[in-house]
Image (cartoon, rainbow, N blue to C red; front, side, top):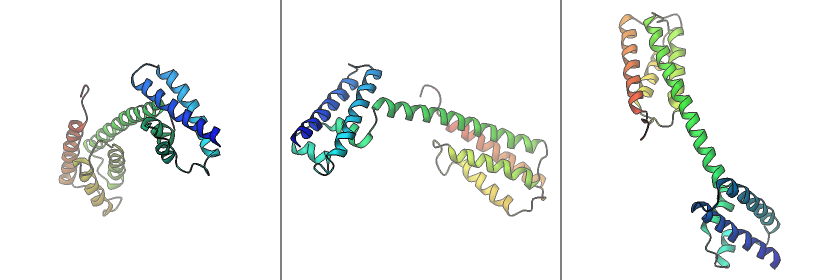
Length: 196
């Protein structure tokens, strides 16, 4: 049992040193990731073996006066190397946001162009506004009360009360085009600019 405690102690201390070396840029990200994955694997194996004897790793660290917050975070809370954690978050966020912004722009332009081409029947306009609303709601950088979101919800609600073959009046079509253009301008202004 004490041998397992010594192993657990060593893994926690080694992980703390590895985390500090990575933060101080003493070790390369690839070396850090490989070593960290080994330590996490050893930790998981040992922790499952000791689960009855050591129910709480945090309590174990306190009992043996280990000051290893980075190791506890990496081993217990996160469970993956920092490089994996940060790479996945950054890549997913950047790729997803760019794709969603492009989708929003496409949906704005398509909706405005359809009105210019006199496509004013409810069954023509409603799907375009629904697509636009869905893409705006996917974009997390926009607040829930963003002008474009609220105006699209209002228009979708209004169109839902009409029949599929009903057409927007000239005044309604003009107002919808104005709301789309206004929302598009607000959308473009809300996007973060490069370098900020």
